[in-house]
Image (tube, rainbow, N blue to C red; front, side, top):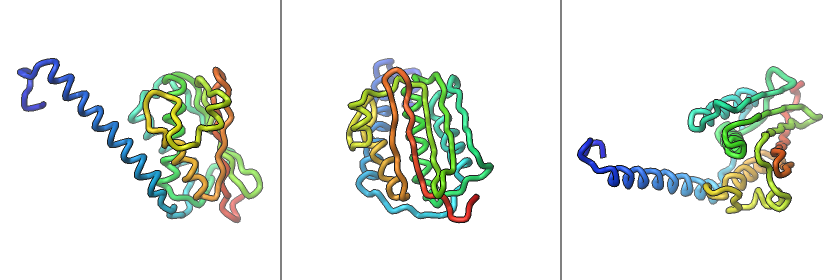
Length: 193
């Protein structure tokens, strides 16, 4: 395509761009399928949660327009340590943030609240997006369940599996037209105040 330069017709350019776009889409689908099928065990180490979450949001911001998203992080502690596989937990937050930005059509409020509750860390991720029906809330973590035009329907199934493998729980509260909140509960590191 680059070699053809200006001599390439508009139709040829559009066709090549479409092929490239579809190739990237297929690559994402295959990646999701492999991740879902493999479901590798997490390599646990101490991870600072605030930095992990901020890093995941910055990564989402590099591939998605978040200019009109008001991102707020509310945490009780300067440092919240969990035992986690950094890469897998990063994937969890990237997926949840990307879904939230999509649900808000790129404009709205996205908040993350982190609290320690006894021996657990509770993370609430809330958006002001379109929300989901009660039926969608029941099925949202099922493999291949899709609520939007694009995607594989595996993203939240992968998120669910990662959280389970970290001995955690994930749930969702949502109402159509009123946004969505995902609630993740993970074990706190023993001895952390």
